[in-house]
Length: 164
Length: 164
DNA sequence: TTTGAAAAATTGCGTGA
DNA sequence: TCACGCAATTTTTCAAA
Picture 1 (cartoon, rainbow over the protein chains, first blue to last red):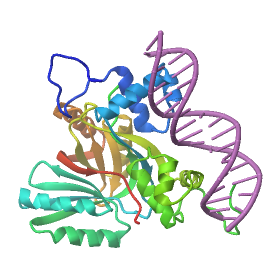
Picture 2 (cartoon, protein in one colour):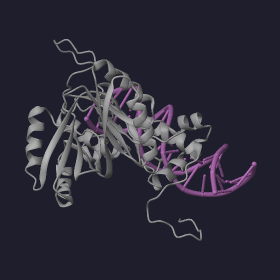
Picture 3 (cartoon, helix red, strand yellow):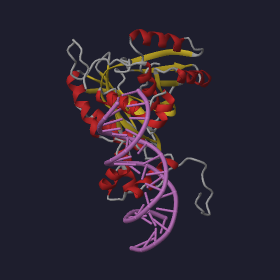
Picture 4 (spheres, chains in turn cyan, red, orange, blue):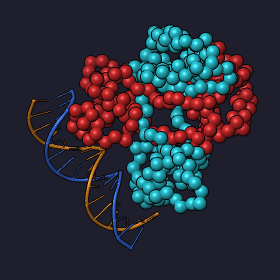
């Protein structure tokens, strides 16, 4: 149940109070979410139901957004990780770029500060796939230029983890 | 046990044969790995043990690299997602950048093609945290320049998924 | 929060398509 | 070879305190 405080509760956003145990728990789950409550309990000096209770709260508060299998891009036929910086002539064109969400090789879309620009993280099958994708992006109205950074080697790739 | 074929087995890499069911299964798990084998079985028209068998194989073959909880960066105190492009004077300096792996705000490190460069994805607490991080990067021997792309909004953020 | 018990899921094994 | 059904084990989850 929701805590009874004299403050109005925000609908769904804003920071959430996390104690040291929460942060440790989140770190453990960010690294490997297949751990059982028994194992987590041992690592945190908590009983399994107590761990369960915390996980439930962290999911309800959207601190844990999802639990996902991390796949090897190359093994699923996507060998060419690339960051594409797209500059546009204004916010309206930027909005049009969001339609790229529906392409499976597009993994991330962020607007970035500075001249109207969008950073994409894409993982096409190969150079040919990248070429096709770039052609598609450059054909969008208002797109002025793209700059691609093709990844040669990946040394680290993980999601956010809490400060301990 | 290893398969008995007349070909030498590669140590650990190379592409893996995936049928349509494997790809569907991988898509489902990349989206939400908390689904039970019963649910997956219903979606794939397979019995739970058959699903389990496939998941086991996909993990053994390192197609599934890990299963992780995805956290909300802002809710765990990391509000300033930034891509940092670092140019160095050579490969030796590039190697020195890999030590940044140990910083919790550094999430990705990729070498990229072109003039010796490294793309970082970092998520410091705030602008002050970014400033400290950039100072640290620029103090590394051989680092010539950094260019930061601060994310304003994130519209899509997911991992690799197989082509269906 | 814990303990203890019920419900559900995971996983191994034997069988058959 | 691959998937199924059954069954043992483990895990999750819900009580009550």
